[in-house]
Image 1: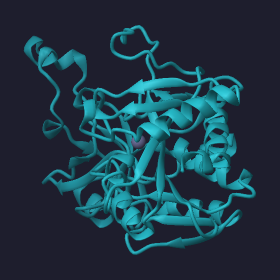
Image 2: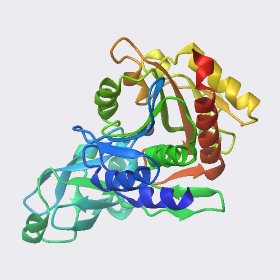
Image 3: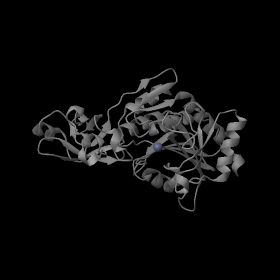
Image 4: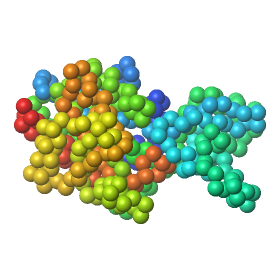
Amino acid sequence: MKQLLEKLSNAYGVSGYEDEVRDIMVKQLGKYCEVEVDKFGNVIGKKGSGNPKIMLAAHMDEVGFLVKHIDENGFIRFIKMGGLEDQILPGLSVKILSEKRQLPAVIGYKPPHLMKEEESKKKVKYEDLFIDTGLDKEETQKIVQVGDPISFDSKFADLDKATFMGKAFDNRIGCVVLVEVMKRLTGFKGTVYAVATTQEELGLKGARTAAFKLDPDYALALDTTIAGGTPDINKTETTIELGKGPCITVVESSGRGMIPSPKIKKQLIKCAKEADIPYQLDAWKEGMTDAAVIYMTREGISSGGICVAARYIHSPYSIANLKDMENSVKLTLEFLKRINELS
Ligand code: ZN
């Protein structure tokens, strides 16, 4: 699983521009089941036939940026694609993913030596920032076009045997869990759809069209959630921590996102307890997963969520734990094995 996470984390896939990730997912899922890419760009793997039908959804896209315009001196202005805090942006290394070539660049930052006191106190706004390719205007214009996606330029690295850092763990981790579940799944009586979705970060879009097409009986979102346990997050904000097991969603976005089907939530807890898998219960104040739209599809689809805790999501580097991924795979498989207990 680690090798696949490394590959997927280093791949670029800003929302709507998931091609590189999609190619990897088609190949990986294709080893274990039938695969198609639907009209919207979702990858749909299928194992088994008949009822019940269950949809597992993991989004492929990541937050990033898009070229808005190139100014008269060749500096690039940009818009944000997804939830990103402006204050983390100055000085970041990024990659402009142009058709001609991938261009490394830096988000410009005024050195402290030149900052006036009021400037250093001012709140950072992304509209005031710019991207510097180091090239002159003509060179930049030859390569970069308005609309080119821009990604964090971060490389995956091991912290220890089971802890990693890298970009886009939200939600390449879910993609890895999805592939691993399909790899190990045998003898399921019914149909499992493994869906790697597009454009989750900008409105859960791919999951919406895929759920309509597949019309499943049940669905699970396989995603990441915010890990606390760091000096800046106290237990009243979140009790979720790295290494303490998969997180079973109890609510998303204070009820504005998915409210899981009680049956599915209880069954996930039962499966974890009886198979001796550690787990955490996760009440999200903010944030949602693909399940928030899947569960409102057609007449409603009984849904739940299994998420892996990760620190610093929506930033150039997240930290996550292999044990949590392994236990998420186990919990998903246990849930599938006992699917007839739901009816
Ligand atoms: Zn996510």
